[in-house]
Amino acid sequence: MANKAKQVEVTSARIRLDATLQHLVDKKDESHETSEGESNTSVVEPPSVKTIPSLKKSATKPSKKRKRRDNAGDVDSADEHQTVIMKLFDRSVDLALFPEDTPLYPVCRAWIQNRPLDKSLGTLKERPATPKQEEDAMNDFYPFVYEMPLPMKSEDGCLYDLRVPEPLPQTDEKLDIHAHPKTYPAGDQLLLSNLARWKEIRNRWREASIMNEMQYVGSMNLLKEMFDRSVEN
Image (spheres, rainbow, N blue to C red):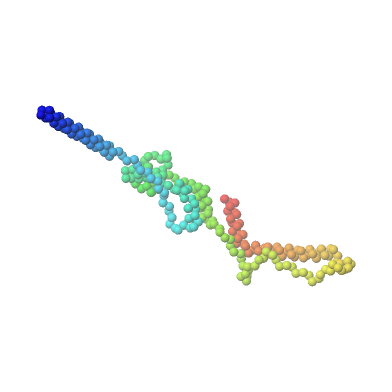
């Protein structure tokens, strides 16, 4: 009977000891979690920096040529026209508006004003135009040519092929190769008559060439302008 009572007392003491130890462990865990939460709240969040493409100023509808050039140069334009906005304590500043050797004061002043998209706050000078930008500006001034002007029509409104002139009519006098040699005209006389005819034929071809070029004077002027522009560039 005494042993049973002693065993009950030992068991009760063990239960109380386990409860006390568990209480101490739980209290220690709560204090550790509280200290971690306080340390997490005391950490200052680092400034967030995000890169966004700058807004393009376009008040008019771009032409098809401009659209093609913009689509072809998306990568280049994304690299050249970017803003680096840093947000710190609910205020933002565009770091891309300042060169690397800028003092801290103008950067802080722009950060205080909290206008990251205002380019007038920066000290970065405007970049010189690249050769590609100059070429694009030149293309805007001189539009692309996709077809040549139509040839000029004649007075009656028709278009004639003037490259080949009309044949010179033959003389009525024919040379009989079977006639007697004594009746043949002299060689000098034949040469002179043929030279006169050949000169007339040559003059007709020259006139036809000039008239044909006059029909395409618009195309010739356009080609000359394109050639002069390529030589200047």
